[in-house]
Length: 172
Ligand code: ZN
Image 1: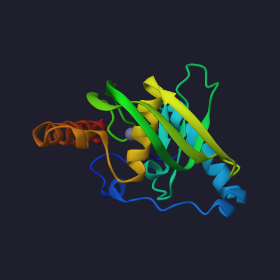
Image 2 (image 1 turned 45 degrees about the horizontal axis):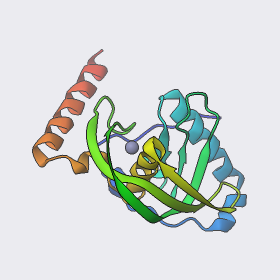
Image 3 (image 1 turned 90 degrees about the horizontal axis):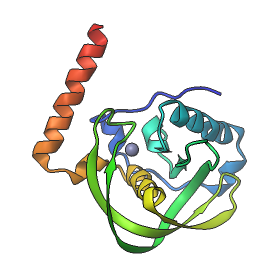
Image 4 (image 1 turned 45 degrees about the vertical axis):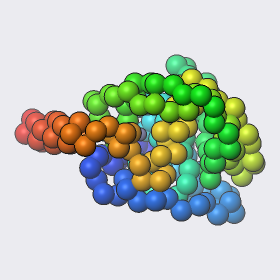
């Protein structure tokens, strides 16, 4: 397995809209390896979700595990939200926007349909943090980041803060 570099805001590649996965490709060893590498990268970060877009692969899939003990790894290929209910506000972070957290309002409970890593269709009803995470990762596949929900002024502050943090890292 290998750790993957994660693209960081404001990298323009995070804005690319991902293309649907040809389900026949799920038989390819490289794609199965990529799922494993994405889990390893996400767990190491640590994070609870990682979209393919964040590792510069512009296809519609993502990995998620919201448990504390890595006990429920989920792969979503070509995910679609089919129902939404209610609203919740959750303080989100993102591996592509390190060190920044902000409240985002999203649907409270959702139904998502997707293929698993072997191409089997499944339907998942999610609420709480899992619902937040699914919506957050699906935004990545559309080239959208959680900072897009902030005001332009706040987003500019985030950009400056990250630029400064990167400068300090490279100087160290
Ligand atoms: Zn993210």
